[in-house]
Image (cartoon, rainbow, N blue to C red; front, side, top):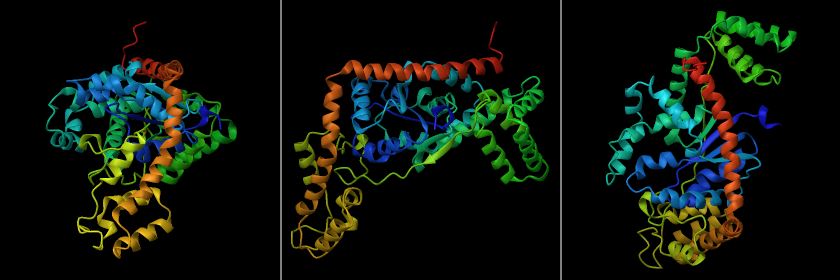
Amino acid sequence: MPASSRQRVLSGMRPTGQFHLGHYHGVLKNWLKLQNEYECFFFIADWHALTTEYEDPRIIAECVWSNVIDWLAVGIDPGSAKLFIQSRVPEHAELHLLLSMCTPLGWLERVPSYKDQQEKLKNKDLTTYGFLGYPLLQCADIIIYRASYVPVGEDQVAHVELAREIARRFNFLYGRESGFEEKAENAARKMGKRNNNIYHELRRSYQEQGNTLSLDKARALIDTQQNISIGDRERLIGYLEGGGKIIFPEPQALLTHIPKVPGTDGQKMSKSYNNTIAIREAPKSVEEKIKTMQTDPARKRRKDPGTPEKCPVWDFHHIYSNDDVKAWVLDGCRNASIGCLECKQHIIDAVLKEQEPIRKRAREFERDPETVRGIISEGCEAARDIARDTLEEVRSVMGLSYR
């Protein structure tokens, strides 16, 4: 399927430290799957990193290229996905500014993570406009590419919902295009006589009878058309729904299953907790960290029976072990026939086996930094081409094209 006919996915990661196993299993393994199914844009979110690291941004510069190498080393393919750095596409910032003119302040203040993150990161002064406005910047990141889907965990769904609300509000305010109905009818005729008739039948069914199945069928019909422009596609959707031109389609959350990856202290693996195992951590360090991980507190001695479900190491077995090994762990722990170090050794072996090819590929990219920079430069140009086109239309509908 050609990229132009595939739906688009947008996702980014903040460069605030080394990527760890939580990132690998929670984000990157999903990207590996998505890059073969959608037109993907993956970016280093350095402006987002500044919202919490503005007092000492050196860590951002230190991590950007290392993080890109992590992506490439795990198998993210620049031939299948566009990889770029957020600040190298300044159109994100311009759209963020323009959206800020029409986004109600209360919408940002009610985002659940706003107060939650302030509580968790009390050591940082987050009473800044940048931190309050980062969900709006996130919205700009998404809709500037007219992304259909944003892969997120459950805790990020509210951000995608906000992006949908902002896109809907922008369309309502600025989608009143002159001669809209005539242009929409012309677009429908471009689909051919048969599809034109089907489109109008479905439109009538939805608008007169409220048949949502007809709405879904009409949207699917529009998606299959190869000979109409993006602008005509948006007009047809707007005409179908009874509004104006859809400047920004509303993005959908692509809910991602994020496995529970424990940190070395038993909490969720997180840079904030300093409990991580990096994707490319040195083997000796990996072994030491896993060997000293907390286990079931009831097993104070080797002969004490334990409860695997209360042990953080058991969560690793869900990720790395097959059914036979898990059965062995369950029986051995509960009956005290195996010790914690025996249990952990399976995880150590599995993690090191997983990391070995990643480290090898990473070393190749580290020896060839020009190739890495070239990949990002190409990705930035591809992203900017789309972002420029979007901004040109946004300026036009907002009356900011002075020609």
